[in-house]
Image (cartoon, rainbow, N blue to C red):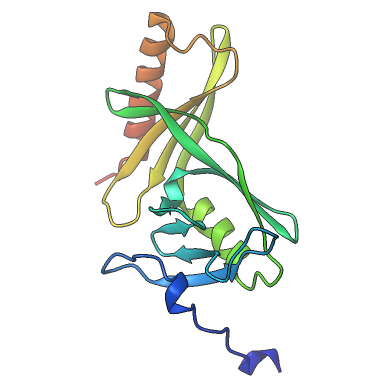
Amino acid sequence: MKLFRRRPKLPAAARPPLAAEERVLAWCAVAGEAASREDVVVATNHGIWLPSAAERLGWHEIHKAAWSGRELRITPATALAERDGYTVLVDGPDVSFLLLDPGELPDQVRSRVTRSVAYTTYHPLPGGAVRVVGRRVSGRDGLSWAVRYDAGTPADSPEIVDATGELVGAARSAAEPRD
């Protein structure tokens, strides 16, 4: 009779400071020796609140998310540089959480991260390659554009910067709605 079982309500002490239009989609207590009763992972329509985090990590700010069946591992994207019309991203340090009763949390994370990606292409460059990504940001119109270079790509060389700018411009044109 799982149909009629309700998920317990998020304890008030564990509730993050949500924005006015933000709502909780799923949550789970974190297991482990150092975890307290208030250590929870909370998925909202705007992003994910991690234990002890002062701010939410937006769905568009997550590079990778993996679920092992017990452990949720998140790789946030970290801004390395801001360029004209796009951000250069690198992987931030992985964070992982042991979740013994995850409920819908892993599915919400997977679907929300996936849905944030509106456009992606991969391009070889001299000495490496780059992925160009347009992502939806909750509560904002249009796409947020970013690139992620393969390891070893000379990302600061003027030739690569120019080529990347052209690739992002082409991606923006391709992703714009047609009248």
